[in-house]
Structures are given as structure tokens and as C-alpha cells.
Image 1 (tube, rainbow, N blue to C red):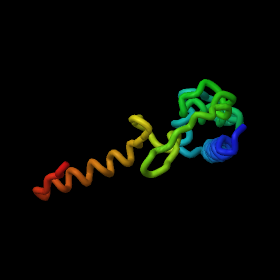
Image 2 (spheres, rainbow, N blue to C red; image 1 turned 90 degrees about the horizontal axis):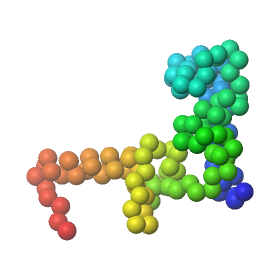
Image 3 (cartoon, one colour; image 1 turned 60 degrees about the vertical axis):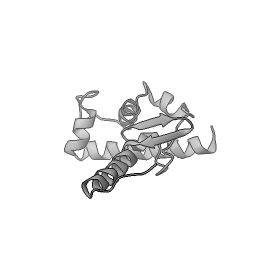
Length: 119
């Protein structure tokens, strides 16, 4: 396992522990997150929280999630793909939905102010 992947795995473990604690505390958001996968909250285990995290990140299992060594990050803000909703790929560049929205806002503001971008 690469050093970078170890960092990702540590983050995933923290996310799973946090979700597990939130479910045990009957947090409404956490309960909605697990609802598609598990019904019995009283016996919700950390391994089940791990599975939810994996599924939310489009992996079929925890093992698949932690063995993935192909994570990419936004070329602008440096957030990893699992930290944002969407990541758009271009030639040797990735842009997250948050950066796209930020830039779109700047463009909208400039257009509203009557400014035009020049190439």
C-alpha cells in the first residue's frame, strides 16, 4: 500500500467511525445515509458504517475502497475526488464541482457588471 493510499484509508476509517457514532446518537442525517443499506439501527456496527462509506464512494465493498490506489484530486483546490460531489476530467487536469461553481459565479458577476472576458 502506497503512502498516499495509507492517508486515504485513514480518512475513510475516520469517516466510518464518525458515521457509526452519529448513527448511535440517532443523528437524522446519519440515519438517512444508512437507510438504503440497513434497517436495524440498534445493532449497527462499525463494519456496516464502513460499507456505507464504501458504497457512497461508488465501491462495492470496504476492501475495494481501501485497495483503490487511483484517487485523483482537483487541480485547483486539491480536494480529493471523495471529498467533492463531482470531478470533471480534462487532458491532464481535473476540476471539482465546487471550483466550477466558484468560477461560474465570477463569470456571472462579471457579466452582470457588464464586463466581458477577452481571450
